[in-house]
Image (tube, rainbow over all chains, first blue to last red; front, side, top):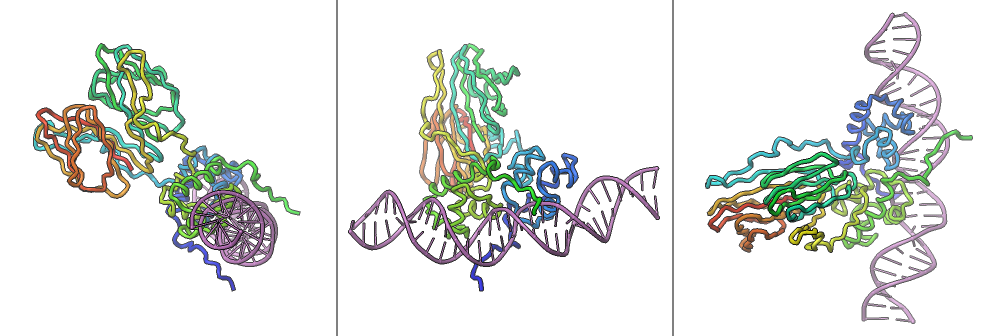
Length: 191
Length: 191
DNA sequence: CGAAAGTGGGCAGTATACTGCGCAACCCCT
DNA sequence: AGGGGTTGCGCAGTATACTGCCCACTTTCG
């Protein structure tokens, strides 16, 4: 008689809950049949059926084969469907009793690892060229003094005091102060 | 004789490359021995050894058990290890050719889910009392105009323009403008 | 010097992930 | 009717994830 305690498959990890739906959804989005995905990924169709039915505890390599065949990131297969409300952005979340008192949500990111808050100051004429970050990184800028010229791969964005901008930083970009007074801004680096 | 084609375990998915390092790093960060993590997670120590050695193709449930025991998000286990330097805080990361041009890293958080960037403005006399957030949430404040009085469970912090503060927001706290001009600040909400 | 804690790995046994095959059910065509 | 595409599932077989138990090695501590 065995005294091995086995995991209860009836209470699967929440991660698994989403995998089956994600794969099916992405497979349909790629306009692939189970057979086609099986051939493309190297995973047997029989296994795909089981996975989409939520019957099997997939391994990382198998899931990664599927991710590659679907041409999506691994994390896309395991993450919960995004139910955040994007409409809150730029909402006037709060106003105080004194007119002028307010709180505004500028940006909201689904971050996975890290947030960095930076204070920057650029004297007139100053230029700072940035190398591209790795995929997944993004930046949120808020200018509170002067004027910032942001150049993302040739695309220029002029940010005046009080203005805000967010962009994916896996491209070559440049900060520049074309104004005549110092530019000061807050820089949020996020992944 | 079998005609089954098996996956070549020598060219593991890139996802697997990081799992072992991540688990080991996070286990040490949680100050847990292999035995302790084994007991806490329900995964055998023998398996943890194999995983940390990169010898096994982990299943999702097993990985999720480990993630729960380490109290981190599942995706944290499969992402590329973080090679950023935590000692960079408050370092003058960059100075430009014009004196005064500078970039300073104010804060860096290991975030697991979400970041929100807020712009706030408080007129003189304005008060905003906040309910405690759930455990794990923290805030980063940067005042760029006026003066902010932050009260965290009776502990008061006076933040002048250009000053910065970070705190865990799972306690009762209050924003107040005790000055005579409007207070404006950026608020980073992070988990 | 020993004791205790942490780690790495061999080994046998069990559960299961994964495979190919074959069949049934259901479309949508002509 | 009948053929081609898609899907769900039962079955047998193989590979392997995962287990518990063992021992060996190292480090730390008294």
